[in-house]
Image (cartoon, rainbow over all chains, first blue to last red; front, side, top):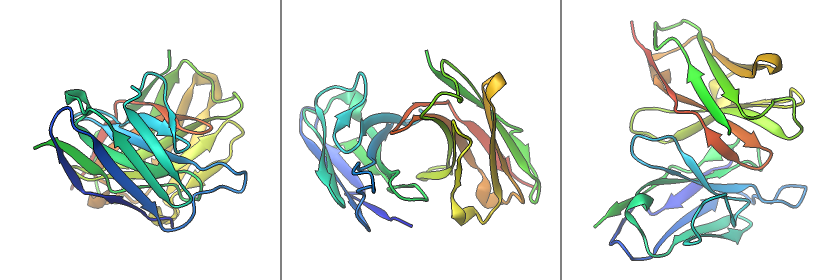
Amino acid sequence: DVVLTQTPVAQPVTLGDQASISCRSSQSLVHSNGNTYLEWYLQKPGQSPQLLIYKVSNRFSGVPDRFIGSGSGSDFTLKISRVEPEDLGVYYCFQATHDPNTFGAGTKLELK
Amino acid sequence: QVTLKESGPGILQPSQTLSLTCSFSGFSLSTYGMCVGWIRQSSGKGLEWLANIWWNDDKYYNPSLKNRLTISKDTSNNQAFLKITNMDTADTATYYCARRAYTYYGFWGQGVMVTVSS
């Protein structure tokens, strides 16, 4: 199975700061069709996960442009510029290139 | 708009079979590229992908559950189902269904809590 390693486990931030989360895969996430199915989800306390980014760098409808996904192959990053209170929660990367699909263990974005 | 809602028994005993239903609206599982997936989350833990069923009835499972999973759908009634046999206390979790429009899970249900206890 593909293992997604997220770092850090927790990211203390001050509102208005930038945050960066890494997701490294145990193998390349480039599909045979040329697409890279790497997604980012945010789970706020007491809520279901919500999609932020798909195919590495595409923001889902309604997601603010302060969320930026980047990367290629097996190394991916989610950057959040100017963190706002509604950005706090646990961020998960997810790959759907290989079966079984797998999630990273999560990164908790929390206030300092 | 797209909505999904999970339903299940709430509590069951070890060795029983869990039957979950995902009732959805705003899309059809007979439309090209559509998929419903099941994901679970144990209390305070991370997310675990369980299974997907696609518009063409292709099914994919997490092999870590060792053939205990069966996913199915009723396109006419806009429902998807997940059965897990031989439930154990380790299967206690919140179970989510989500719509995958080919490349992402854009819509999720609220989740249903399932407790396995004797």
